[in-house]
Amino acid sequence: MVNISKVPHFECPTLIMHGTVDEVIHVDHGKRLSELIPEGQLFGLELLEGAGHNDMELLFFDRMIARVGDLLAHVCD
Image 1 (cartoon, helix red, strand yellow):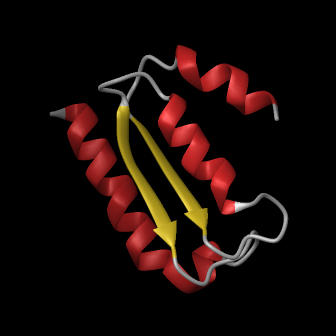
Image 2 (spheres, one colour):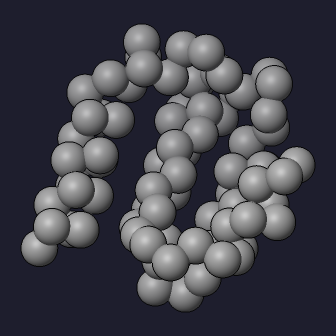
C-alpha cells in the first residue's frame, strides 16, 4: 500500500484510527503504519474494537471526535 512508503517521512503529530474487524484493510496495516511513523510523531493508535471499514464513525463517533480534539489541542499547544 502506498501509505506505507509515505509515513516514515511524516513531520507532524499523527493519529491513526483503525477498526479491529476492518474487512477491506486489515487492522495489522494500521498497526504497521503506527510503527513506521517517525519517533515523536505518533500521537496515538486508536484500535476501535468491533468497527469495520465503513462504520467507525457510526460506532465510535464521540471517541473519534474526542481524539481528534486531543490531537488539535496538542498541535495548538
